[in-house]
Amino acid sequence: MSKLVNILPKVSLWLLMLISVGAMILVFSGGVIDPGAEYKEPVYVDYLLYWIGAMIGITLIITLGFGLVQFVKGMISDTKNALLSLSAILLLAAVFVVTFITSDNSQPIEILGYEGIHNQGVWLKVVSMFTNTIGIVAGVAILLMLFGGLFRVNK
Picture 1 (cartoon, rainbow, N blue to C red):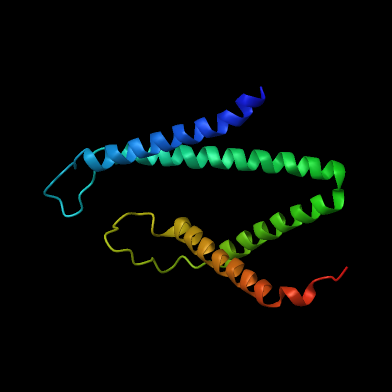
Picture 2 (picture 1 turned 135 degrees about the horizontal axis):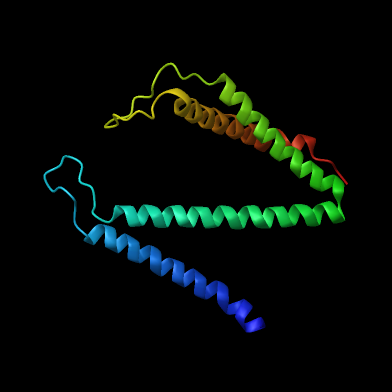
């Protein structure tokens, strides 16, 4: 059993790498749908996008699963620290809510070559929410890097 635990991550890593490289080769060597078009679209780009979506989904499921297991273990062994980590997640969720409420969706974003309908309404608020949240989190990270040492508790 110990050998299987050591070999399984290596085999799965190589298998995922092989599938990813195969999808990329398929996209770049498969030709284009309309050679005369201004923006050439590869024939097999859908397969690559499905593979990327599957990889992101698997990563999210694994990350959230292990995070939940660690949180439950932390609640059992040290409740105070586990609730402190939960409060950080709740604070980030509150930042998401505040930035969504304060987002402006009256002026569409100028995107070259995009003529779709998703550049308005709630989708525009979501994009604005994420960009504002990125700015807030980056600002907090910079402030913590600059001034975090001042608040360090000496033991």
